[in-house]
Image 1 (cartoon, protein in one colour):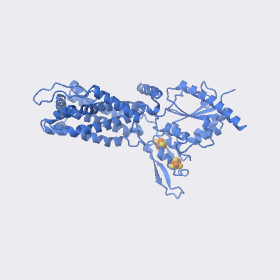
Image 2 (cartoon, chains in turn brown, yellow; image 1 turned 120 degrees about the vertical axis):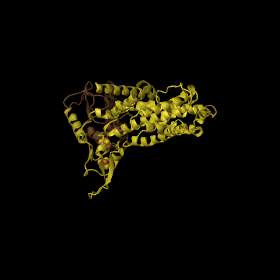
Image 3 (cartoon, protein in one colour; image 1 turned 90 degrees about the vertical axis):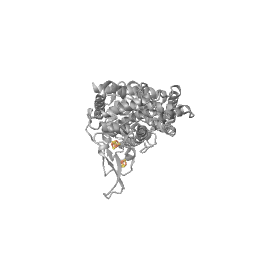
Image 4 (cartoon, helix red, strand yellow; image 1 turned 45 degrees about the horizontal axis):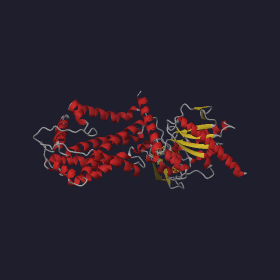
Length: 138
Length: 374
Ligand code: SF4
Ligand code: SF4
């Protein structure tokens, strides 16, 4: 069985993915099946709607990634992004978004390999969550 | 080559910070308070300085004795003196850390330029406060500092003599000299607050305080130094004798060995060159072409979220005059905008966008990627 489809909306200043992407849209993460990366200038630009939309368009899991909390090139981008996802700062994520399959990842430029591991772990997590959801639905 | 060094410096910072995060958690990572730490030490200095000020006597006869009195007679006087001294050193060390961090992580230029220039001014002011503070003790070192500074000032072309006399506050060292030193020490300290206010301009929610735990840690370090290595005076200055004692504080008194080595004129030249380089440093890097955030007035509902979240105070809300049913509209001050996109993330109505990073483009891109996978 293939891995679950995961979209990472990533700050271009966090984990350095310059040489880690391939494929048609330059979005496929090397060494990780079915993980796709969209790079943005700062995690602070990630609107809750972008996350909603990614789920709607077929992502089974979404990761929003910025630099380590406490460090942000634009001072507060990752902090605000995190707070929005946790519902602590408006605009917040809609209730209909499957929050159990949404993850915030806060890593710095130098953590490429552990980033990939975290993505794989998240895919496993998504698989479990999807199974649970299917069981609840039936 | 140059950019490589800067990159390497950034990586070093990131790696150390990562390690600290793992040990202390990001909340208590001292390196994330590189700007707040000098501030913390500044308040310790104000407080301990106030206590010292209560017993200090700014006269040639009284100064040395009053410092001795504080050190040996006042309960904990020696500790307070030690705290004042080591907090001052710690302030310079943390300022240096702060300056290096913002430099290597490229957070000092373009929309941050006010902070950079005022930071340079703050370093000069701190050095002046430090040097005048060492005069107040009025031991042999103080005496040498007064002589050297007055000669150094006098060496400046045209205005030098005037400055030199203003510094001594007469033609010869007198009680007025002590008053002047005290004025330079305390007056400049209070002016620091004004410069700090400028330093924080255009920064929303600056991090000015360390956490309680870190505050205790930093205070503890200062206390240990003050207890183990008490600050002491050298022999009292005697105006007719030749002073020899000069205990070095490399954080504030570094300029004196430089003067001895280069001579006064060349020290002026060196100071000017170094300052000029610091001022011009932001110009060495090419800035990207600016495309500040733009507001779509038809979509903006005046919810203020972008104005609240902008980390550089670049957005303000203005009353609407176009007959819209909404009362206010967001206005971006282009020159302040960092193109960070935090306002875009804050807007639920796609009303504010970065022309180079339109949010709907990212959504389209995500859709395309996902469609390509089925
Ligand atoms: S967040 Fe959007 S709608 Fe609200 S004031 Fe700003 S631009 Fe207008
Ligand atoms: S992009 Fe938006 S949030 Fe960032 S500085 Fe400019 S106006 Fe402020």
